[in-house]
Each structure stands twice: as C-alpha cells, then as structure tokens.
Amino acid sequence: MNARAIFAIARKDLKVVSQNKNIITPIIIIAVLFFIIFPWGTGLVPTLLHGFSGTVDTLEGFLAKMPGNMRYELAGYTVSQQLFIVMLVYMMLPFFLIIPLMIASMFAADSFAGEKERKTLEALLYTPTTDRELFIAKMLSGWLASIALALVGFVVYAINVNAAAWSQMHRIFFPNAMWVVMILWVVPALAALGVSLMVVVSARAQGFQDANQMAGLVVLPIVALFYAQMAGAIFLNITTMLFMGLVIWLLAGALIWLGSRGFHRNRLLAG
Amino acid sequence: MNTNVISINQLTRNFKETVAVDNLSLEVKSGEIFGFLGHNGAGKTTTVRLLNGVIEPTAGSMRVLGLDPQVDGPVLRNRTGVLTETPSLDDRLTAWEILAVYADLYGVPRKAVRSRIQELLAEFDLADRANEKVGGYSKGMRQRLALARALLHKPELIFLDEATSGLDPVSAHHVNELVERMARREGCTVFMCTHNLVEAQRLCDRVAILEHGRLVALGTPTELTRQYVRRLEVEIEVEEEQTEAALNMLRNMPQLVVGEPTKPNGAIVVTVKERNSIPDVLASMVMSHVRVYRMAPQEANLEQVYFTLHEEKEGV
Image (tube, one colour):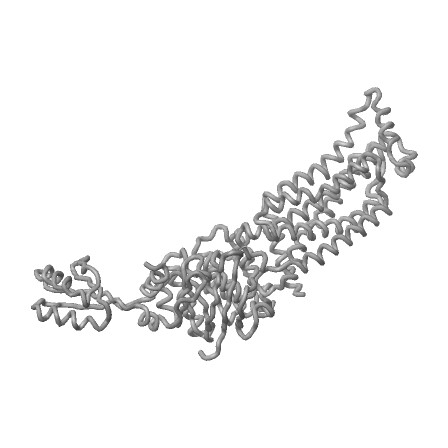
C-alpha cells in the first residue's frame, strides 16, 4: 500500500469538497440546527410551558411511556430536568448519528461521481495508484471529514447543552459515558459504513446528484432508530451502543472488503 | 531507435456492440515521435487507455516498456505520462497544489518535489500564476499545466491525446517545441494522438492512421505520401495573354490531367495523375509556344494521404 499516494488523494479531495458550496452549505445548516439551535430551543421549553396547566401532566405521561431502564435513570430529577435529559441526552443521540453519516455519504458521493462530472477522473486513473489504493483513498477523505466534524460538533453540542440547561441542572451533566462510547466507537464505524457504501455507489453513478440521492437513503435506518427510541421500543445504553458499534464495524468491514475487491478502474471508464 | 517501446498484437476492444479498436497490430520504437491519426471515435483514446492498463482489452496482447499493462499497470504507469484529451484539472486547486498532489502520486522524491515543480512551472511559463486557482486559467494555460503534470516524474514514454487541440497558434507552437525537444534531446518516446495532420507531418517520425478502430496505414509521412498520393497538384505560371490558350490545351490532355484546370490566383492549377506526367505537360506547353515562367508541383502531404484513405474507405 502506498500511504503517500492514499493521503495525497484524500487531502486533495478534502480541499476540493470543502470548497463545494453544494456540500458545505447543508452541512453547516444541519450542524447549526442540531448543535446550537436544538439545545437552546429545548432549554426554553420549561420557561415557555410554565404556567400552562396540564403541561406537566402531559410530560409526566410521556416520560411514563419510557422503558423501565430510562425511568430508573431519571429517578430523582424534577420534571424539567427529566425533560432535558430525555431530549438532549437520549433523543438527540440517534439524531447526532445522522451528522457523521450524512457528511461521510456526501463526501463519498462526490468521490468518483463528482470527479466524473468535473472531468478530473481520467488523469487520476493514469497514475501508478492501484485500484485498491484508489478505493481506500476515496473512502479516507469522507471518513476523516466525518469523524473530525463529528468531534467538533460533539464539543460544540456539549458546551451548548450544558449552557442551555444550566438554569435547571446547575451542573455539567453532559456528556455521559454512553455519548463517549458513541463518539469513539459507533461514529467511526457508522462513518466507515457510510463511506464504503457510498464510494461503491459513486463509482457507478454518472454524477454527484445521482450518487447524492442514494446518500439520502443511507440515513433512513438512523431515523428508524430515533422513532424506536421516541416510542420507547428500545432503550440505548452503553451495552446496546457497544453492540451496535460492533455490528456496524462488521458490516463496514465486509463492505470495504467486498467493495475493494470489486472495484476496478476499468469499469469507471468502460462503456 | 531500435528497441520496441510498444508492441501491439491483434488488439481488440469492444464496448457492447461497438468495436472501438479492431485487431490492431503495430510497434513503436524507442525515441521516436509516433503519430496516431484518426477522426473522432476512431479508437485513439481507447488505445491509449489500453496501453496504460486503464481498461482491459477484449482480445489481443500488448507490451509497453517491456511490461504487460494488464498485469503491471501501476509499475508501467509510473514510467509513462499521459496528457488526456481534456486537461482533467480541478478548478478549485492552484497549479502548485495540483502538481504537488501528482508528485506524491508519481512518487517524486520528497526532497525533489519543490524544485521539480518550480522547474516545470518556469518551463511552461506558469510560475507567475502558480498560486491562482486553475478555474481562472485560459485554455492554453490549462493545457500547459496538464502537460507539466504529465512530465512531473520524467516519464520514458509520453502519450499526448490531442495536445494542441483548441490552442491558439502560439501556444500550439510552444507545446510542439516541447514535444520535439523531449524526443530529440531527452530521448523520450512520444505517442501522439492528433487530428492535426500538418503537425503530424512536421513532428512525427512515423504515423499510423486509424479508421473505425482499424489500422489502415502505417509508415513514415514520406512513405505514406508515396504510397497513397498518386495525384499531384501543379501550379503553372504562364504569360498572361496566353492563359486561356494554356487552359484549353490542358483541358485536352485527359491522359495526363485530372479534372478541370483552375485559375485561382492568376496561376493555373492542374492535378496530374502522377509525378511522371509533369515533364510531359511542360513539353506539350512549350511545343505549343506557351511561355511558362514557373511550374511548381505541390508536395504531397499527410492530409492528402488521410483524405485518400478516408475516401477509399467510404467508397467516395
């Protein structure tokens, strides 16, 4: 493996994609929405609802539907505090997973399809890089960008969550161990799964938009996870996160192995 | 110029129903400038891709620099440079950034990267705008940058796919000078795909003409003109008052002259059937007391070869 060539392609892709407004604008909008507006919006809820009769009963009813494990963890908190913990710690967690997956998918969608569209692919194919190096290099840029932005987003989110909830919580309560497991274990796995899937799709697509449409479908399992948690069907804790991460890593590993074996530059130009 | 740098044997490449390269066999010798001529879709770019191991052949075999492109693609591509038909440059990067990326891809020694890039930017007259985004470059600048990129790693064999297409005459001349210098001084072998027959005639040691993926002619430009151009245009300047008489006389020589003589710029232009007819035409005019001041046969060129072959193929 020629690491120098792999990192050169990944660096180039990061530089090119980071200047692409079609990719960067939605990422910025979603990041601001999730990491800043959502925690502060949640922080305002108790104040806005104060005085509305029946609201506390409604919230208590909602929390009563949560799985037993969650109710156990929320014991001892006021209703407002419970709302913060449920919304910002538990409900946000699957949503947070959408961010790295989306970034990874968008970067990866651009990998080959974007190069085809910009007519820059052919020169790359004439270089001494092997097919496997090319495949890995194209995955690497999306994977690195995804993890870097997820980490930055995590820090920004943590600051905003603690600041927004300070009036109710009176202490730094975020992140908890489950979020640390998610950031260090699940996010890299999910990003790897997203990029490997999308690089395979991108190699077969004619343009970025074709490939990007598929990127939208990649986030559907995460949306399902969110609704399952919202409905109380599942409860995400450290054990489930570790298990989920393991399954995703295995899937990503299999997809990378299959993708790199089936990837031939011949097919990018043929036809 | 003895060893074969490229040996192609019955190479075929199909794309579904289309035969892009059809049973092609040829050899390119070390240090020569080899012209690969053909109209759009003749199979030139496909051949370049095959020779660099970027696509696989449907049938046949080839050796490039002693290597099999299908087996040793990465090793081979480290010894070849390719200027693609479109410059294939990222508009969002600067010339320096592009060359730095490709220096890494071609394994240019790290310590030599900076000096090599500076050398090429100066050589291709891009040093002043090295840190500007390529999106703002003119077509000529982009083509020069693409050529600089193809030469970064000092390849032994360079493929130029329409290197001067769309360039202004000055830029085209500059590129051609560089190509000639690479081959003549630095011993690099050049495989040049082109539509430009004048350029091919001037630069190439040998040319191959491709028609619908098939090789229809191969040889030096002189060999090909001798072989394929049988008709010859001759410009004749006569006493002005005798022009009409000379035209009438020439019209009555169907055994020597083809078609109708014309008089585009004062001088008479006739097409003779073969070179041997020229003295007979002159003798007839002198015997008819036509005062001939000048008789200039136009040298046959690749353009005539190309159109002769094309007409034969199309049954014109």
